[in-house]
Image 1 (tube, rainbow, N blue to C red):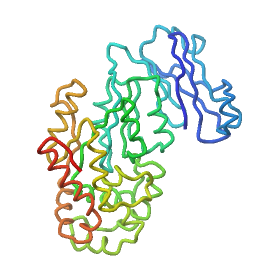
Image 2 (image 1 turned 60 degrees about the vertical axis):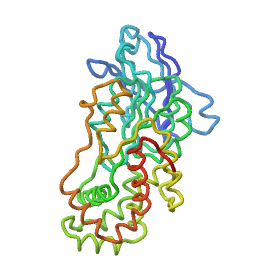
Image 3 (image 1 turned 135 degrees about the vertical axis):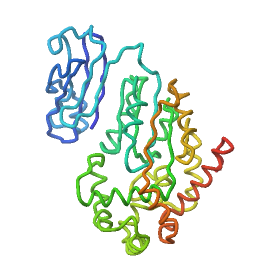
Image 4 (image 1 turned 180 degrees about the horizontal axis):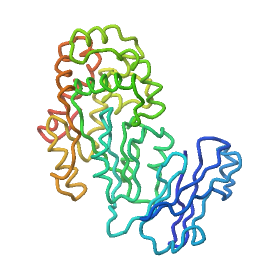
Amino acid sequence: MLFNVERDLGDLIEGYLIPDGFSDHPSIIVSGIEGILARLTCDQYREAVVESGRHGTGLVGFRIDNSVVADLAQREILGVHDAKSGLLIYRRIPASNRKSLKIVRLETQIVPATRLDRFCSEGFQYELHSAERFGHETTLQAFHLDTLDSVYISGRLLLKNYEAFLDRGFQAVALLTEPYYEMAARIFVLKKMARVPLSFLGDRDRLILTPAAEHFADVDLHSEASLKSALKKAPPKVRSVLTSPMTRQLVCTTPEQFVTKADVAAAIELLSRFTVVGHDSEPSLFQFGVAELLGRPAEDIPLPTRHRVLEEAAVRLREIPAAETLVEHDLIFDHYVRQALRVGSFES
């Protein structure tokens, strides 16, 4: 999905929304403080969209004026969303409250830290949480919103695909997770996924994770023997879901790509470009770093909740050789990151 607002003149907002479907008819919802103000079908012709083969009719542009929303120029707070997906296209917020920052928060846990995102994204004109749910093209478009200087993006991204934006005004932040704890969390999510749909997972995640969900459906997190057996019998598609996910997020460009020990140095090198890096073993470092960046009290910044069941499962996983093999590269990465955090610098 491609989208942007080309201009906001106060009493006129013009932009476009190019849907994924070649023949789909895009529409938007315009909302204000009081709720939905208008539903509008995109009816403005864009010749370049037809010529590029992106859409059949080219009717992907929208025009919002006083005939659509009364007193448009006087509205300091306004939102434009894709009617189908709910994706934010554009937002007005009072200039006095707007943060002139571009931030990407790399999510390192399979369960997104939604409270953290809601807190950190306050005051940003554009926000996209859990961006992996929307796919690469939509996420890339959010990075390309070059008419805005107030953007917050978060997600379990393959950051190598977006590294160039660190040279275009974006600052990256991340709270890293201990590898065995994240493995325990992933197995827990896979077990749950086998029984009920999980709203925080996108379509691509569901496709990739389904074989692993079926494999771990009956595993007992409280039993080292059950975990050991499940890991030992896991086929390649299942093993890949648990294989050094942190290192892969920093060096891979596709979910199918694998990593080697040599990639750890490249992962640390990319992490060294982050503005704020923290580790869940010492979360206060992350809190203070983000607080300084956002100009907000460190004690107000919410951290992801740690769960005793997962901590206990992580202890069991540490005793299983098959688990160590799966997260071997993340363990090396984690060791050097903790060491770097202690001395205050990253070296690959």
